[in-house]
Image (cartoon, rainbow, N blue to C red):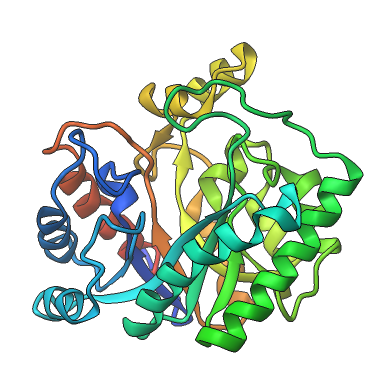
Amino acid sequence: MTAAASPAPALDRIRVGSAPDSWGVWFPDDSQQVPWQRFLDEVAEAGYEWIELGPYGYLPTDPARLTEEITRRNLTVSAGTIFTSLHRGPDVWDATWEHVSQVAELTRAMNAKHLVVIPSFWRDDKTAEIIEPAELTAEQWRHLSTGMERLGREVRERFGLDIVVHPHADTHIDGEENVARFLDATDSDLVNLCLDTGHYAYCGGDSVKLIETYGERIGYLHLKQVDPEILSDVVKNGVPFGPAVKRGVMCEPPKGVPELEPVLAAAQKLDVDLFAIVEQDMYPCPPDQPFPIAQRTRRFLRSCGA
């Protein structure tokens, strides 16, 4: 007679949710994406209570309507998402702030407290064409760090939100070296990190090590895994991120890396409340593909104690 497996320790500081990204949504409007009503229906049915807004304009932008839609599905918003090119210097501030203000206004109206900040890609997000150098100059690093600090300050003062910067493949804030450089150059009171476990692994980083080294800077999590075999070929052949996603480089947990149990355990040890939002990049995908994956992923995370 074998002993029953002991239950996973409760991760009582981790709040699990999902996002439009896990339904193949990358753009406000795209014929290859599921309608927003279907996303909301399915994310609730899959067992999630927290969601992100996704690309601004995908979900309704009228606060009253969006509140009605999420409330009747027992959903709550954890964050909005913004895109920035602050490494280009002060000349882009006004356009950046116009975009940020729209998203921040809706995020605040949904009673969320975070803005996930994604740095601009150095490739075109649809064509994968290289549009600027992959490495920043020293001056561009200064623009990036001072611009993010200004953004953090302005967003907090005007909207009461905290920014969390998302290291991302094919951007200038990607793997261990650039993430450390960015964190070391910015004020921890103004700028913290959204650690995306999949993107960090894609770029060669170790999520547990990052949490243990820069724990005070981890303000938010995206849970994601990569398929190591596909990733190896992607790295070997210099495949851009978009085409890599179409190949299935981001995979359903627990089939890939990093293992999420140690990541969640390390995050729990920080002893702060953290959102852990599931994001499985799979744009584009068949409309019937996301829901069963979302259900299985939620069950898996429950088995981890989340």
